[in-house]
Length: 233
Image (cartoon, rainbow, N blue to C red; front, side, top):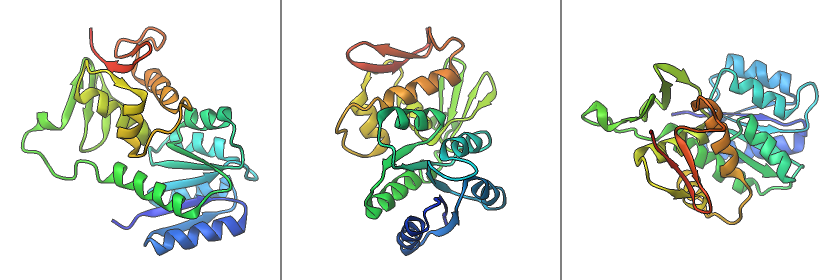
């Protein structure tokens, strides 16, 4: 698959550096200098993944993330000179899948792009023989691991890539308790170095989407001091 990457970054030097590294990986790269221009590219191109700066003219990266999530669940990686935890949490709450603070190593950006694309587009590429082997069901939830589509009572629920990976992990083994470390490492493929509330934010977003009452969840349960599990009672 010829992946198309969108870079939304108003600093030309940074954009050109990222474009160079990503094109060396074989990706087709589009560059937008502001959020409005980025939206126009998204409308006319089949973008596979977006790398968004926060501080941009005309439309910032937070608003652009929100607009993308209205119609698309492509992986989103945010770049920002803001490295405070509340800025990261805001980006994740709006639907971003990953967040990196500036300055950054372009090789790490490439590695994160590769990882997000691999997990999102290459999951479950082999067709199983029976439908039940790739349809995960818990209560009113039905998760198709081939099309990556979640339905609740037959209605589609739009998930971000990270939300999908967390939910799939939990739904494969209902009742099994997973720690935050296990969830993070299983869904990101990276070593869990510190507790930065990333998983907690994604769990909260999932509850907002799948629970009738997120404050009294039916499905995703918190096991205090341990982690999370999914069940249907």
